[in-house]
Image (cartoon, helix red, strand yellow):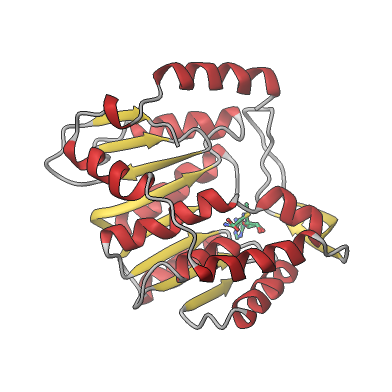
Length: 268
Ligand SMILES: C[S@@+](CC[C@H](N)C(=O)[O-])C[C@H]1O[C@@H](n2cnc3c(N)ncnc32)[C@H](O)[C@@H]1O
């Protein structure tokens, strides 16, 4: 999305965005009070941040195919699968989620007592590591399509001694069917790769068959491009989604039966 559109989106969002006082749903109120706004820096997080710092200072070049950038400006014909060479530092700077967001994603499985999480788009494994430290007895499945990037993610996990992350290398479209045969139902899915609206819709439709009533789906970069934002708007209109939360950069989807369908912009 170009900067002018993004600024307009931001003003529209901030006018609607609520904090704890503007929310009526008890389910959402409790989630906000006890999870969204319960920030905490665990010692494990400091070790992950030390890895992020190393990545941000690593000038080594990686040659790989960028499967996921999409086109930030155009809404159609997004052709982003091009070979590219970028330094580890450049990739880390543009791809990794900020610590505050990583901490939130780590709190969600703990709050709902989830057992398994799927991350689509590993990059260097920073968010996967936060998810893996969420609670004991949690398993993280994560998928990365660029082999040189996946190799660095593996180093991240072994360096941090994280053994509860399974990294699958390959494109989502090829890896997902095999993954769902082995593990047909996920408590949480975090979609953070392939920033094209049509791809997001395709993945969402696939994932929707492999979650349950209490699952949470996080969609990242919902304002990356016009097509990503349109795809997000189409997804939140689906009947099976009973609560959707727009945090501006990313969106949370809840499927809990018994909630009356609602959508909120929430300050974070
Ligand atoms: C934004 S980064 C992920 C960042 C990571 N989730 C984090 O928070 O640290 C997106 C990653 O998804 C990968 N990706 C994009 N499209 C993909 C696809 N279709 N199949 C597999 N991997 C893909 C890219 O190679 C890139 O490393």
